[in-house]
Image: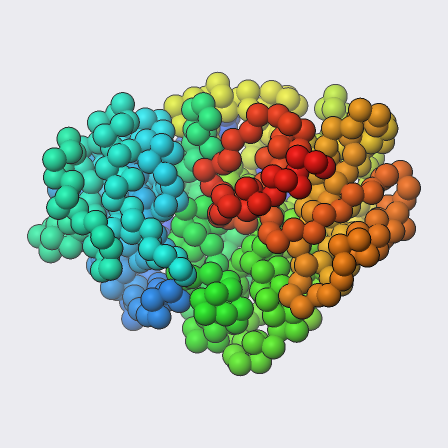
Length: 632
């Protein structure tokens, strides 16, 4: 009999070393570990200290050896180009082994770093896996970042090589990559030996223009044609697999270090037990390989599970319309989809009645997973109603690499509560603490903290800076990892994440969650999405100000709508919220991964110095908001 969620969760928290040593059986090892937890450097814990493996053996070779080489491993669907290409497991293995040979021929060895600055094309996944095949450490930088941000990452992780492409394709423009790469290479204090360029047609600049730089510039296809395929290099479980940067470039970038063995186990376990995805299934994760979701659930997770993964180059709307995701599901027989709430809100805004869904047969879809930004109940209800499948909110961070809280569909499907990512995932010992680190009562809001040790697959440290890791995450509550989020656990053990701790505002001595106010605003029939920030107030300390984007076709005066929303907050939360200000705007500023830039909005409203994060999707949105924010 399969153990249910509560039994599994209890086992994972009572004896994590034994629990995760047993879970290591999901992975093929060169040297099987005999120990689960390594506490020798606590609180910097490690996993499987005597285990050795190669993660690409688990993602590729073992599936081919099992006779499934003809199954589709990676499906590239470019909505912006109107092209699709499928790679079988055998074909993908050949591509990865060959490019691994390219890297080895360039003098790259185990432990060397390689920066990948690529758009959403198959070469992004191939390059990631090729690095892992020879034990090199990849660091994916979101394609299109400016030269300054790229140079900062070059200086921090000190790569031997950069792998890039001539550019990325957006719905209305093409983004030239090579001038930014050349500028970053020339301005960085660290010398990069080699730049490898994948050629894409239709771009103004070509690698031949940059031969005069200090680095050697090479063509991907030329090198691959002459390379000898490389076999998998045996690495220790604790060796780094990748470095992924989480913040902007003010000061030193913050590079999350992911290990190899623990991450492989976490991916295998989460694919089976959270997402319910097994060999032969198809998963479509609408993210970018530059983000942690893309690392875990476009590339490593689905391939380790033996599934087919869809790599999508396009947008949720505009390529060509708000039915783009439904087309992908229908054409590729997608079983499980993963996207951000922001994408769903954009689709709903453009197609409120989901009329475009009728054009596509999405009957293969079993579940829709959502993460990256708060999933408001109204969007949750809409998506569940139009798709007719479970909509599963899951909450996690770049640092953790996989979900902290989710509905574990593969283990036991639990009742869903709107506004909650359901329950803590086995392995994550979630506690709600007050400012002094003391536990709070059931239903009381506080700081969400994770009792150490964190499970396999989470961050080991920050690149080159153990002390910064300690100070940033481990010192606020000794014995715990501080998530920086606030929330509460209800009487059923369900977790409710209310927002970043700095999104809790103090109105005349009353602590209020901006997330709770956003849930109320989002429930209004006219509102597509919203953000609430706390702005400085001489009398009350802070006051809440709401910014809302309306659904397409809504006809209402701003004055009338504001009155309705203020009354709704008063009804649902009470007069204590003292909520009086609502502004209707065309768009909210977001990162490319869909997170609303509430902190930047708050800094502008308070008249403080601010910098627009390098991850912003459209800087023009901030410019358009300035007149509203500066009089809030």
